[in-house]
Length: 306
Image (cartoon, rainbow, N blue to C red):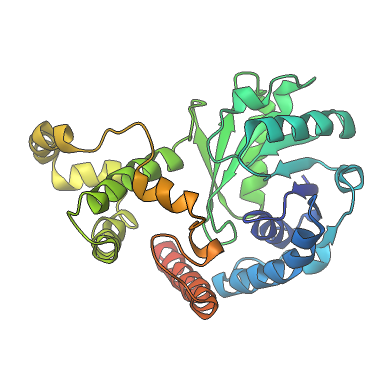
């Protein structure tokens, strides 16, 4: 794959575009928002700075990226289209329907959905075999894994092409064998988040202390030893003994905690709105983003030095 189109220049699009271009691909970008397209230039530049810090192979720069003011122009001649529009099934189906009429039969249509089943996104497509999940992790220019998810009708050759393309840009393809909602990374993440939110809501621990506990406890370990390997390290007998009583105590709620819904209703959405669980000034937001990027870069470099 040499020519790629990225649809959606919000949270994920700029980092995805920079990573693809750095991997040697020609990238065209489109968004229905002129403001998002205008803002993406600075975000793409910042992503390239992080890719430099990571020491990623330099197979391309920002000159490989262009902005399009129409969807048709953006996807003309594309080998791969990556959609990263908001997480609404109807919106994604509408976009994929338009793309179905605009791209060549050989073009792969990839969704960066965080968890919508790929089989649902294939509905109504004239060539469902080319529709596949390409789930990047945020921030996409730092986290090296990409989940590859086949829907019911995704062709095996589409999976092979996607895996090869991800390796081509020096990232790690993670093949998800079943099209389950949330795939793998987000199912694990949201299970952790549910328990964390429950512990804070129940007054077991403050939000700041919980973050310290997770970051310097299980987070620190899991960055080096994965969950399955951790079972072996701790001992399956120990896990069985603790899980036999602790599993009964863990949160199993099927809705979303008021700790989240009440804040969302008030417009407290997190960093993007200046406040969520915590409060942020504009200066703090800029400092946090820079500091977190630096720490993620340093951590990745350490983990790659085997």
